[in-house]
Amino acid sequence: MGMTLGIDLACRAAHVASLAGPDGALVWRGRSFFTRPADLEKLWRDVDCVPAELTVVMEPTRNAWIPVAAWFRRRGAKVVLVPTTQSADLRAYYAKHTKNDRLDSAILARLPLLHPEGLREHVGDGPADPLRRVVKQRSSIAKRRSAIFHRLDAQLELLGPAWYDALGTDYGKATLQFLAHYADPATVIRLGQARLARFLQRYSHGHWREGKAAELIAAAKESLQLWDTDGMDFAELAADIAVEAEQAMMLHAQLADLDERIANLYAEADPAGIIRSAPGVGPVIAGIIAGRLGDPHRFTSLAAVRSYSGLVPKVNQSGKAEHVGGLTKAGDPLLREAMWMAAEQARKLDPQLAAKYKRLMDSERHHGTAVCHIATTLLTRIATSWRNNEPYQIRDLNGTPLTQDEGKRIVQEQYQVNKNPKKQYKRATNHKAGREPQESPSAPTSRPATTKPTSPRAA
Image 1 (cartoon, rainbow, N blue to C red):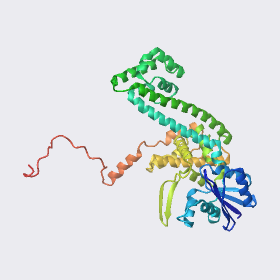
Image 2 (tube, one colour):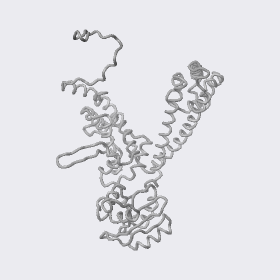
Image 3 (cartoon, rainbow, N blue to C red):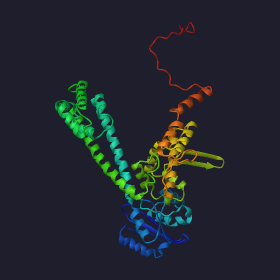
Image 4 (cartoon, rainbow, N blue to C red):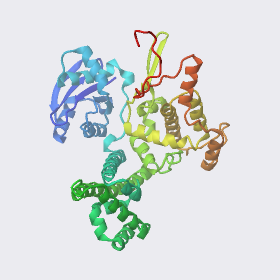
């Protein structure tokens, strides 16, 4: 075992480093430095050891660790990232009521002596990887756009159901352009059917014409009939709707640019398209898996891949007692979300996954629990295929290779699941145990009682 450099990183303040020898004894401690070439060179001279024998241990503090880790890796040192919970538990053991940067750096320097099997060299660039960043950015923008759509739904409800019926739930370019310009019913009526039809035809590429214009004018007239002249300020409501519509259009354009970037970056990360070959994995989800999972060879086992996703259950075992809890959710949340969406589609295309889903549902598992099982299995298969540089192959239960269309047909014919087995199960068990299903009491009635008094006194 060589020397260990423990670094307690800070985002804006100075970092603090401590150096420990092979036996865990501190050579020096509490050296402050910033992420500047001159400071790092001075720290490197203070270490004074063979680069291959140096292990740098640090916590993944926001993004401050990335340039420091890259700098030491370029000089041949081994870089290890330690979860903050792990170092916090060790600090509580050494000094329960004390926390400072010097103590934290010393603990990190001594960590290899106490937990050598848990220290695995970090590879990859983390957030410095552009694909990892861009898929996270796309997810954030997509959620912001969804929130805008929900607000537009609520605002259109103020105008009446006719608007909702005419525009639908798909806020495309034509819908958003219309809402950005003509969300005021009075303005729509003044515009007239001919001019409105030309506007709609321009932004819908000819899909909306005079018929849609007539629907919107009828909706505008209905809104005016629903409200009195003093009941609703349509101009102010139209201004609010226009702000939301303009933001949605801007996010539409940004998402289109991000999708193009993701496609290009994914092609570089997975030129063979192995992730994309898995069922239920589209272009965006493939980019998310490649960006958030990273190099699959960096994991020591497939169990580590599953653990990184956070889709494995918590286990508390002692003696003969064992309790299995909910998901750990300790891994990457975006990867977990992508695998959930992929599993929902993959179980409809892959007979093996469909059979497992049906078996879980027949054993009275909840749909969400069953999909989590499918997502974990799917992720394991994707990681295996990626490691072996082999495309994902759909097979039946006998192991015979299938095309995606053949797999879909087999799933539809053999592995359909009862729509609501959970409620049927509860009803059956309640009656089987001699208990009636619990129901809420009926509301009191205003009708007079029809029962006779039970005693003369009550009469």
